[in-house]
Image 1 (tube, helix red, strand yellow):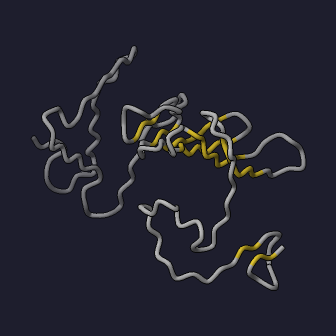
Image 2: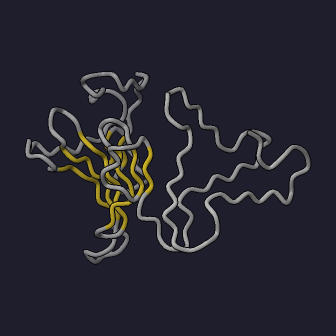
Length: 171
């Protein structure tokens, strides 16, 4: 099926030539601009939703979804699910992001439910620049570590066996 195209090269192709620049501040969501696919649920019930469902098999099990969830007052959360019942990520209407956290209301980025043996956050930086920068402009600590570990091993470990210049820790 082709919309705006005479010879589609996929099962569904939507094509439109539109030069309007994206602008998130537009109250009309630029719904009449660009190549727009609109999926709408007219319900005003809290937590009602509209979604795109991706299935990889002919059965009714397995798949992923991108879900817009009605939070009232013209605001919506966005959820991404993997498998039939696992919400992998949620973006709240205020921009807070939760990975493994369905309610990241207390942080701009919240990572929760890290599986045993997995690292909660990994930054691999192969560039000659800062790997992690915390720019704290408020009156609270820039870094707070709450370690409730039950096995010994320390709270901070610095592995600097490949240092060529400088020091492993500079305060």
